Image 1: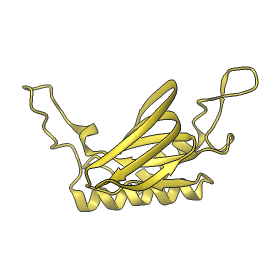
Image 2: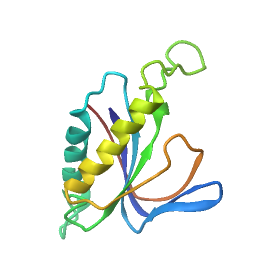
Image 3: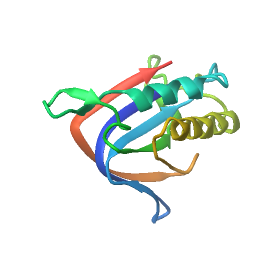
Length: 145
């Protein structure tokens, strides 16, 4: 499982011109599921995201988590994180999990994040999503289990 974690201000996600989810501030997390991921992977990923200290404290140091600052997570499925373009110019997605299982692990990750005390909003798995994102910092972390 791979996540691109971005510290954000107001962020919204729409499908077909209709607003699906939005958060006032927190983390936009783009999540890719790999074919080797197990049922234990979502809990480990959620634990890391919830505890990641990338928000500034009163001294301007990145020392606070999304939980600490009362932020939310917008969790967005993105199989293209496992696109391999090392051979040619057209990415291969053979490392990405099949859609049904990937959706199951994506939903498990959302539930695990919520159980870690973080409010979670989600996108629509497999949909053509439009995301308006206000990056804060910018701060972007790539984490893979």
